[in-house]
Length: 303
Image (cartoon, rainbow, N blue to C red; front, side, top):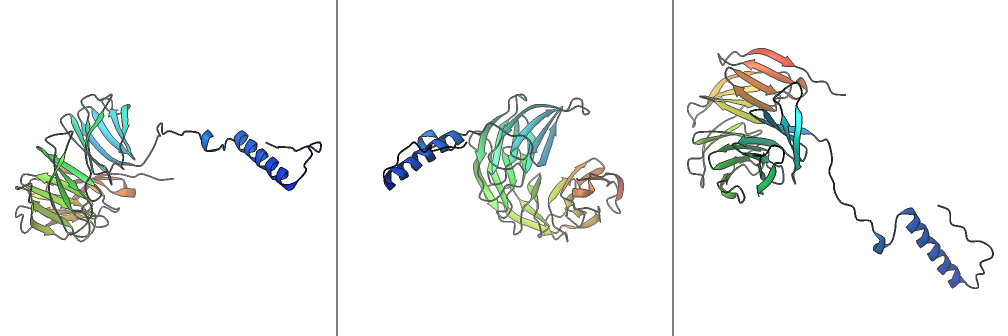
Protein backbone atom coordinates (compact mmCIF):
# COMPACT_ATOMS: atom_id res chain seq x y z
CA UNK A 1 0.00 0.00 0.00
CA UNK A 2 1.25 3.52 -0.89
CA UNK A 3 0.28 6.45 1.31
CA UNK A 4 0.48 9.89 -0.34
CA UNK A 5 0.64 13.24 1.50
CA UNK A 6 -0.59 15.79 -1.01
CA UNK A 7 0.84 19.31 -1.41
CA UNK A 8 -2.37 21.04 -0.32
CA UNK A 9 -1.78 19.91 3.30
CA UNK A 10 -0.16 22.86 5.02
CA UNK A 11 2.53 22.02 7.52
CA UNK A 12 3.44 24.89 9.84
CA UNK A 13 6.23 23.37 11.91
CA UNK A 14 8.37 20.31 12.54
CA UNK A 15 6.04 19.00 15.22
CA UNK A 16 3.18 18.91 12.77
CA UNK A 17 5.36 17.01 10.31
CA UNK A 18 6.20 14.41 12.96
CA UNK A 19 2.54 14.03 13.91
CA UNK A 20 1.49 13.55 10.30
CA UNK A 21 4.22 10.96 9.72
CA UNK A 22 3.19 9.07 12.85
CA UNK A 23 -0.42 9.01 11.67
CA UNK A 24 0.66 7.80 8.24
CA UNK A 25 2.76 4.98 9.74
CA UNK A 26 -0.10 3.81 11.97
CA UNK A 27 -2.49 3.78 9.01
CA UNK A 28 0.03 1.81 6.94
CA UNK A 29 0.58 -0.74 9.72
CA UNK A 30 -3.13 -1.28 10.17
CA UNK A 31 -3.69 -1.73 6.44
CA UNK A 32 -0.69 -4.07 6.15
CA UNK A 33 -2.02 -6.26 8.94
CA UNK A 34 0.72 -5.45 11.44
CA UNK A 35 -1.52 -3.60 13.86
CA UNK A 36 -0.98 -2.16 17.30
CA UNK A 37 -1.18 -4.04 20.59
CA UNK A 38 -4.94 -3.53 20.71
CA UNK A 39 -5.31 -4.92 17.19
CA UNK A 40 -3.15 -8.06 17.57
CA UNK A 41 -4.44 -11.13 15.77
CA UNK A 42 -4.87 -14.17 18.00
CA UNK A 43 -3.22 -17.21 16.45
CA UNK A 44 -4.24 -20.66 17.71
CA UNK A 45 -2.87 -24.12 16.88
CA UNK A 46 -5.38 -26.16 14.89
CA UNK A 47 -3.33 -29.16 13.81
CA UNK A 48 -0.62 -30.42 11.50
CA UNK A 49 0.21 -33.32 9.25
CA UNK A 50 3.33 -35.40 8.83
CA UNK A 51 6.31 -36.02 11.07
CA UNK A 52 9.03 -38.61 11.57
CA UNK A 53 7.62 -42.11 12.05
CA UNK A 54 9.65 -43.69 14.82
CA UNK A 55 7.36 -46.12 16.68
CA UNK A 56 4.72 -48.73 15.94
CA UNK A 57 2.79 -51.34 17.93
CA UNK A 58 0.29 -53.82 16.55
CA UNK A 59 -2.67 -55.32 18.37
CA UNK A 60 -5.20 -57.41 16.46
CA UNK A 61 -6.49 -55.48 13.45
CA UNK A 62 -4.99 -52.20 14.58
CA UNK A 63 -1.62 -50.49 14.33
CA UNK A 64 -0.63 -47.66 16.64
CA UNK A 65 1.95 -45.40 15.06
CA UNK A 66 4.11 -42.62 16.48
CA UNK A 67 4.48 -39.90 13.85
CA UNK A 68 6.36 -37.02 15.39
CA UNK A 69 4.03 -35.74 18.11
CA UNK A 70 1.04 -37.61 16.67
CA UNK A 71 -0.34 -40.86 18.05
CA UNK A 72 -2.08 -42.40 15.02
CA UNK A 73 -4.53 -45.33 15.02
CA UNK A 74 -4.80 -47.37 11.82
CA UNK A 75 -7.23 -50.11 10.85
CA UNK A 76 -5.04 -52.78 9.23
CA UNK A 77 -7.71 -55.47 8.77
CA UNK A 78 -6.82 -55.09 5.09
CA UNK A 79 -3.03 -54.68 5.19
CA UNK A 80 -3.01 -53.51 1.57
CA UNK A 81 -5.23 -50.55 2.42
CA UNK A 82 -4.54 -49.29 5.96
CA UNK A 83 -7.19 -46.83 7.09
CA UNK A 84 -6.54 -44.00 9.51
CA UNK A 85 -9.19 -43.96 12.21
CA UNK A 86 -7.94 -41.24 14.52
CA UNK A 87 -4.97 -39.33 15.88
CA UNK A 88 -4.14 -37.27 18.91
CA UNK A 89 -1.22 -35.00 19.72
CA UNK A 90 1.18 -35.54 22.62
CA UNK A 91 3.37 -32.88 24.20
CA UNK A 92 6.65 -34.62 23.39
CA UNK A 93 8.04 -36.64 20.48
CA UNK A 94 6.90 -40.26 20.31
CA UNK A 95 9.85 -42.66 20.57
CA UNK A 96 8.17 -45.97 21.42
CA UNK A 97 4.70 -47.49 21.92
CA UNK A 98 3.58 -50.58 23.83
CA UNK A 99 -0.03 -51.78 23.91
CA UNK A 100 -1.56 -53.72 26.79
CA UNK A 101 -5.32 -54.29 26.90
CA UNK A 102 -7.26 -51.08 26.35
CA UNK A 103 -4.26 -48.84 26.91
CA UNK A 104 -1.24 -47.68 24.94
CA UNK A 105 1.90 -46.66 26.78
CA UNK A 106 4.02 -44.09 24.99
CA UNK A 107 7.67 -43.14 25.55
CA UNK A 108 7.22 -39.46 24.73
CA UNK A 109 10.78 -38.09 24.75
CA UNK A 110 11.06 -35.14 27.17
CA UNK A 111 7.40 -35.58 28.17
CA UNK A 112 8.12 -38.91 29.87
CA UNK A 113 5.53 -41.69 29.93
CA UNK A 114 2.11 -41.02 28.41
CA UNK A 115 -0.91 -43.32 28.77
CA UNK A 116 -3.73 -43.35 26.22
CA UNK A 117 -7.11 -45.09 26.52
CA UNK A 118 -7.60 -46.85 23.17
CA UNK A 119 -10.82 -48.71 23.96
CA UNK A 120 -12.49 -46.54 21.32
CA UNK A 121 -10.20 -46.73 18.32
CA UNK A 122 -12.00 -43.84 16.68
CA UNK A 123 -11.42 -41.53 19.63
CA UNK A 124 -8.39 -42.39 21.79
CA UNK A 125 -7.96 -40.25 24.88
CA UNK A 126 -4.85 -39.24 26.82
CA UNK A 127 -5.56 -40.25 30.41
CA UNK A 128 -2.26 -40.13 32.28
CA UNK A 129 1.31 -38.91 32.24
CA UNK A 130 4.42 -39.36 34.34
CA UNK A 131 7.21 -36.96 33.44
CA UNK A 132 10.44 -38.88 33.96
CA UNK A 133 13.65 -37.05 34.88
CA UNK A 134 15.40 -38.06 31.67
CA UNK A 135 14.34 -38.56 28.06
CA UNK A 136 11.90 -41.45 27.53
CA UNK A 137 13.23 -43.55 24.66
CA UNK A 138 11.64 -46.95 25.17
CA UNK A 139 8.87 -48.60 27.17
CA UNK A 140 7.81 -52.10 28.18
CA UNK A 141 4.80 -53.07 30.29
CA UNK A 142 4.30 -56.02 32.64
CA UNK A 143 1.38 -56.17 35.06
CA UNK A 144 0.84 -52.92 36.94
CA UNK A 145 4.22 -51.49 35.99
CA UNK A 146 5.73 -49.69 33.02
CA UNK A 147 9.47 -49.85 32.52
CA UNK A 148 10.91 -46.83 30.79
CA UNK A 149 14.33 -46.62 29.13
CA UNK A 150 15.03 -43.04 30.16
CA UNK A 151 18.26 -42.31 28.28
CA UNK A 152 20.85 -40.78 30.66
CA UNK A 153 18.52 -41.42 33.60
CA UNK A 154 18.69 -45.20 33.20
CA UNK A 155 15.72 -47.46 33.92
CA UNK A 156 12.59 -45.92 35.46
CA UNK A 157 9.78 -48.07 36.90
CA UNK A 158 6.33 -46.48 36.97
CA UNK A 159 3.32 -47.80 38.89
CA UNK A 160 0.44 -47.70 36.37
CA UNK A 161 -2.25 -49.35 38.51
CA UNK A 162 -4.04 -45.99 38.40
CA UNK A 163 -3.91 -45.01 34.75
CA UNK A 164 -4.99 -41.46 35.50
CA UNK A 165 -2.24 -40.88 38.06
CA UNK A 166 0.86 -43.02 37.36
CA UNK A 167 3.53 -42.80 40.04
CA UNK A 168 7.24 -43.46 40.39
CA UNK A 169 7.97 -46.87 41.88
CA UNK A 170 11.75 -47.01 41.51
CA UNK A 171 14.70 -46.46 39.20
CA UNK A 172 18.15 -47.80 38.45
CA UNK A 173 21.07 -45.87 36.95
CA UNK A 174 22.34 -48.27 34.32
CA UNK A 175 25.60 -46.44 33.71
CA UNK A 176 25.05 -45.91 29.99
CA UNK A 177 22.37 -44.35 27.82
CA UNK A 178 19.16 -46.39 28.03
CA UNK A 179 17.50 -46.58 24.62
CA UNK A 180 15.31 -49.68 24.84
CA UNK A 181 13.97 -52.15 27.38
CA UNK A 182 12.44 -55.62 27.40
CA UNK A 183 10.98 -57.32 30.48
CA UNK A 184 10.82 -61.05 31.18
CA UNK A 185 9.99 -62.41 34.60
CA UNK A 186 11.88 -60.67 37.39
CA UNK A 187 14.39 -59.04 35.06
CA UNK A 188 14.55 -56.00 32.82
CA UNK A 189 16.97 -56.08 29.90
CA UNK A 190 18.14 -52.63 28.89
CA UNK A 191 19.79 -51.65 25.60
CA UNK A 192 22.23 -49.25 27.22
CA UNK A 193 24.11 -47.58 24.38
CA UNK A 194 27.89 -47.95 24.66
CA UNK A 195 27.41 -49.94 27.87
CA UNK A 196 25.89 -52.81 25.90
CA UNK A 197 23.21 -54.98 27.52
CA UNK A 198 22.38 -54.23 31.16
CA UNK A 199 20.35 -56.73 33.18
CA UNK A 200 18.41 -55.38 36.16
CA UNK A 201 16.71 -57.43 38.88
CA UNK A 202 13.21 -55.90 39.24
CA UNK A 203 11.76 -58.35 41.76
CA UNK A 204 11.61 -55.39 44.17
CA UNK A 205 10.07 -52.61 42.08
CA UNK A 206 10.98 -49.97 44.65
CA UNK A 207 14.64 -50.95 44.78
CA UNK A 208 15.77 -52.57 41.50
CA UNK A 209 19.30 -53.97 41.59
CA UNK A 210 22.14 -54.72 39.20
CA UNK A 211 22.21 -58.32 38.02
CA UNK A 212 24.73 -58.36 35.18
CA UNK A 213 25.82 -56.86 31.88
CA UNK A 214 27.37 -57.81 28.59
CA UNK A 215 29.47 -55.43 26.52
CA UNK A 216 28.16 -56.02 23.02
CA UNK A 217 30.92 -54.16 21.20
CA UNK A 218 28.63 -51.77 19.34
CA UNK A 219 25.99 -49.32 20.46
CA UNK A 220 22.92 -51.01 21.92
CA UNK A 221 19.71 -49.32 20.71
CA UNK A 222 17.06 -52.00 21.06
CA UNK A 223 16.54 -55.38 22.72
CA UNK A 224 14.10 -58.27 22.49
CA UNK A 225 14.11 -61.31 24.77
CA UNK A 226 13.02 -64.84 23.91
CA UNK A 227 13.76 -67.77 26.19
CA UNK A 228 17.40 -67.81 27.31
CA UNK A 229 18.54 -65.27 24.74
CA UNK A 230 18.56 -61.50 24.41
CA UNK A 231 18.70 -60.12 20.87
CA UNK A 232 20.35 -56.72 20.76
CA UNK A 233 20.16 -54.19 17.92
CA UNK A 234 23.77 -53.08 18.22
CA UNK A 235 24.20 -50.22 15.77
CA UNK A 236 27.05 -50.75 13.30
CA UNK A 237 27.78 -54.11 14.94
CA UNK A 238 24.51 -55.53 13.61
CA UNK A 239 22.50 -58.03 15.66
CA UNK A 240 24.17 -59.37 18.81
CA UNK A 241 22.79 -62.44 20.57
CA UNK A 242 23.51 -62.88 24.26
CA UNK A 243 22.99 -66.03 26.32
CA UNK A 244 21.16 -64.81 29.46
CA UNK A 245 20.56 -68.18 31.12
CA UNK A 246 22.92 -66.96 33.86
CA UNK A 247 21.72 -63.43 34.59
CA UNK A 248 24.83 -62.57 36.58
CA UNK A 249 27.21 -63.67 33.84
CA UNK A 250 25.62 -63.33 30.39
CA UNK A 251 27.73 -64.70 27.53
CA UNK A 252 28.22 -64.28 23.80
CA UNK A 253 26.00 -66.54 21.72
CA UNK A 254 26.25 -65.10 18.21
CA UNK A 255 26.03 -62.06 15.99
CA UNK A 256 25.23 -61.05 12.44
CA UNK A 257 26.57 -58.02 10.59
CA UNK A 258 23.38 -56.72 9.05
CA UNK A 259 25.13 -54.30 6.73
CA UNK A 260 23.36 -51.20 7.97
CA UNK A 261 22.86 -49.67 11.39
CA UNK A 262 20.74 -51.92 13.61
CA UNK A 263 18.37 -49.66 15.51
CA UNK A 264 15.53 -51.94 16.58
CA UNK A 265 14.73 -55.64 16.83
CA UNK A 266 11.70 -57.84 17.39
CA UNK A 267 11.72 -61.62 17.76
CA UNK A 268 8.85 -63.95 16.90
CA UNK A 269 9.30 -67.70 16.70
CA UNK A 270 12.45 -68.62 14.79
CA UNK A 271 12.94 -65.19 13.27
CA UNK A 272 14.52 -61.90 14.27
CA UNK A 273 13.28 -58.77 12.50
CA UNK A 274 15.90 -56.02 12.49
CA UNK A 275 15.25 -52.37 11.68
CA UNK A 276 18.55 -51.69 9.93
CA UNK A 277 18.26 -47.95 9.15
CA UNK A 278 19.02 -47.24 5.45
CA UNK A 279 19.53 -50.98 4.88
CA UNK A 280 15.81 -51.53 5.42
CA UNK A 281 14.24 -54.46 7.26
CA UNK A 282 16.45 -57.52 7.70
CA UNK A 283 14.92 -60.87 8.66
CA UNK A 284 17.20 -63.48 10.17
CA UNK A 285 16.65 -67.15 10.90
CA UNK A 286 17.71 -67.72 14.52
CA UNK A 287 16.67 -71.34 15.04
CA UNK A 288 20.27 -72.49 15.43
CA UNK A 289 21.43 -69.26 17.13
CA UNK A 290 24.87 -69.28 15.48
CA UNK A 291 25.83 -68.95 12.72
CA UNK A 292 22.81 -66.91 11.73
CA UNK A 293 21.23 -67.05 8.31
CA UNK A 294 19.76 -64.09 6.51
CA UNK A 295 16.39 -64.98 5.02
CA UNK A 296 15.04 -61.77 3.57
CA UNK A 297 15.86 -58.11 3.25
CA UNK A 298 14.04 -55.08 1.89
CA UNK A 299 15.80 -51.91 0.90
CA UNK A 300 14.36 -48.44 1.35
CA UNK A 301 15.61 -45.59 -0.78
CA UNK A 302 15.58 -41.96 0.25
CA UNK A 303 15.32 -38.98 -2.08
